[in-house]
Amino acid sequence: MLIHGYPLDGSSWEKQSTVLLEAGYRVITYDRRGFGKSTQLTVGCDYDTFAADLRVVLDTLDLTDVVLDTLDLTDVVLVGFSMGTGEVARYIGNYGTTRIAKAAFLGSLQPFRVKADDNPTGVPQEVFDGIRNAVKADRSAFFTGFYQNFYNLDENLGSRVSQEVVDVSQSIAAGSSFYASVAAQPTWLEDFRGDIPKIDVPTLIVHGTADRVLPIDSTGRVFVKLLPSAEYVEIEGAPHGMLWSHYAEVNAALLAFLAK
Image (tube, rainbow, N blue to C red):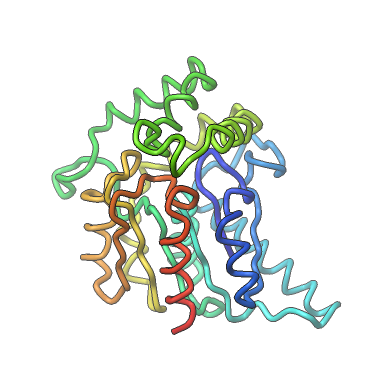
């Protein structure tokens, strides 16, 4: 089960879905509420609701299994990217791992993004306030700047990332709900430290060393200290948008993890 990041949709897993399908895995993606082809609701932009949505997806597919007798969603691997890692952590925190075999966090939000006395490596609240104001003021302009840092275009445009990929990413972002584009911002401030101890299945954490959106020193490297049993992979030079720019390295880490 692949859960996408902001402000993308399920199609952002193109490079991973192809390889996973070729390796014989069943791949399921869905669009988070307010993004992609999902309903553009004006309620429920919080991780408890997002996790409940994920549970509904799993429950619905299980109901389909009863009718078709073709699927078995009791051995699920949850794979989240960026904002999607929040669903993985909160789903496990709220519902446990009865149906979950493994979990993977790619470019993770965890453990906690906001600077506080007990989180000195976090980002000051006013930085997030500025981001939200920028989205409110002109979300199209915001997305242009966002993708500059998402893909580290000053380093990767024309080599690891084509202009066409950037254009498609911009188009997907523009198609998201204007409401969700703003309302999703506070979810980045969620404190997942209470969810992490409940992760009791084999776990993979992958982060790019050149991530400018969710810098590794306040995310991946801190996260693995709170979950030392996790397999931890750093991809040298990878930006936040590593699902495309460094897809070969991401895919290799995923396939190796799934094979264990």
